[in-house]
Length: 254
Image (cartoon, rainbow, N blue to C red):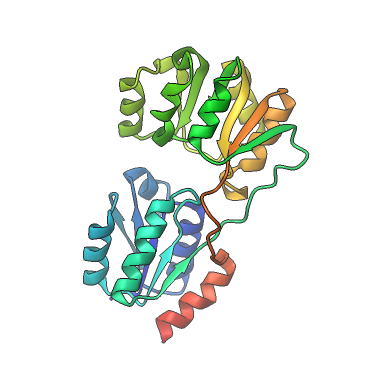
């Protein structure tokens, strides 16, 4: 019997999968892509579901599995997934636990501007010049086509997922402006990428310590770059990985 279902191919999702494995607790980890599975080592008691799930898909899966607890360890910006998962768990009467990643620290890291969403970021970028190094992912590539001269101004660093690369190429981004790599990245590697791209602006999200947020901003400061940070969506309640572990144990043991 699968006692725990964990949503999220994140650092937190992997840590909680490792916790379940150590405790000999059967867990199903749901990840959006094969990349999410491939970066996680094989563990006893842990299986995977690969593929994006909408509300109907979540309902079908959780109805079949009937876990003792559902853990939402998805990315801080995956707000639609979080909303759907919380609603499905409420409808099915399942215990739902949201993992909240601590906010990143943007203090003392140079010229940082915070905007509420990608549309606001695009509007501001259209008042500027210079190459933009984007770390906000392939999902925002279409929105960034509204930046003037985006094909020459925007450099995209995205996950090495074939679907995302194809979408970016289909949108007209030249292959020379695509960096498909799995992070998080050390400060010196960020620095090398920014300099290679001749970038003067960093566009990013508050991915927290687990997502290398500090390393991105610190490297940008060394390059004298301006930084645009898209705020996290809403103020979601949740617990840390450390606080989640005893809650998972309690739910499993009843």
